[in-house]
Length: 179
Image (cartoon, rainbow, N blue to C red; front, side, top):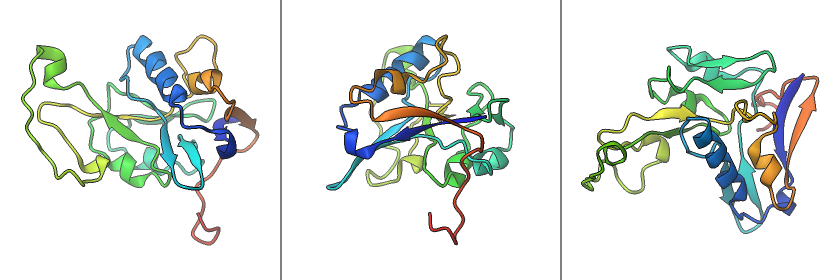
């Protein structure tokens, strides 16, 4: 049995409640507070993006330290303590569902000196900050939550997000299928 989160874009109003709930739930679990889903807006549609837990899982195959694993529920998970922040998984993900987060020196020491370390137009995957050890963060379907239901789905105001259980694992589209 495979589980993944689906969105009904016509219902999404980009309120950010899903991101806030995700962030709070993971912070309570002692993990990075970075939301595990992103909101994308265009003139035509507003939608959230989260991990598809692909059957092929290119992120899993790219991880050089085996910090990414597939559990018994077919969910792809990142062990934040094991991740070395190489960003190979993010480059391999066809959905752009892996982000990076870390605690800056200011979060530990209380002081921060603003020193630009990247061109402002650089892709977020390429950005880095001095003294920040970034780790991969991606949807883990809120495995640490006692309810067993992802926080984004529980707190979605418009019910645009839903948890879907299927017999087959969603797979990465091939070039012939037209991503």
